[in-house]
Amino acid sequence: MTLFAEFHLIQSFAPSNLNRDDTGAPKDAVFGGHRRARVSSQCFKRSVRLHVGQQGTLAPAALGVRTKKLQQLLVAALAERGLTNAEERIAVALEAAGLTLDDKGATQYLLFLGRGEVQALADMIHTHWDALAPAASAPADPGKRTKKQAKAAAPDEVKKAVKRLLDGGKAVDVALFGRMLADLPEANQHAACQVAHALSTHRVEREFDYFTAVDDEGGADETGAGMIGHVEFNAATFYRYAVVDVHKLVSNLQGDSALALQGLAAFAEGLARALPTGKQNSFAAHNPPSFVGVVLRHGSPLNLCNAFERPVAPKPHQRLTELSVAAMAEHEMRMAAFYGDSRDRWAVLDDTGAWPAAQGAAQTSLAALVQWLREQVQPLLPASRPVAIAEG
Image (cartoon, rainbow, N blue to C red; front, side, top):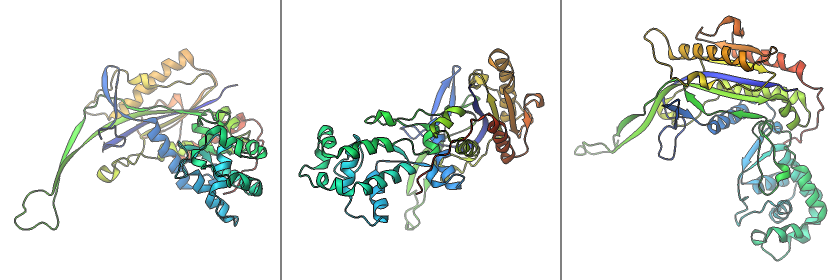
């Protein structure tokens, strides 16, 4: 059985530069033969992750952390247990799993770990504190040992324990967005969620803001600007799309359907509320979506971006958001006839009035839309198999 929760958003941003390329210009792409504004999927995913963490909709233990500073996190966790000077033991324990540290104690690349995994690693080092002592006092510099030497330096029980503990930690964001650990492939997590790059529904040209800044302490003879520059920006109506494989999410969370449902609801709310932070101090583009559509599909996912392969053209008495929603509704009707399933269900939060009433249940607030999602998904989930989460 397959069940996909899809999210389709139409969101118009005022002049802004939410997601920059290497030159500082707003990201863009050619689609349908025309230049479009673009905001990357990575940008929106990070915004959603941060929003969910800040709002407290999920317990800290059910969230992850992306960092190279795992050693520092473990030092702090062990200090709470009254254990100090733990750096050498931590290095040996991590190297036993193939996670080598540099001379500053950082991992070679960013690790995406559940908070529960970090706590479990601290518990394991605490448990094997004495067994790690001889290896930690070995004369070889941990930062310069080869991986083979590092693994040989750790007790066998530590090698087995480290790999067993790296199971995702029931972190919702790790379960949603997945991870790859090059040196520990058995700890990889295949993402339950896919997020598309947001594209403008219409043609976009870059614009330039020329600015000057005055030196507050300038003398009477200093009449020129203290600084001159320019920043690129655009204003666009975006189509955004994301899809969650609901049963994969449950599987990634070790069968905990209750946590999966809670995580799906938090993701849905975060997707609508979270905004990228790029250049917001300069532009303050705090514009929520004009349309949020949620559909539960029982067949294959359907990204509706092709509704805008021919760019939406402005009209004097209709908003771009309204025209975009109407184009998406028409495209959805055609694609659903070809590829849809009779069990598919829509619900929408629509400020434009362009979505046909026959194509989905209209909701009056984001909270109501999220509640509809919970009520529709819950009966379709397997019985929950709760597994304890290590408390942070």
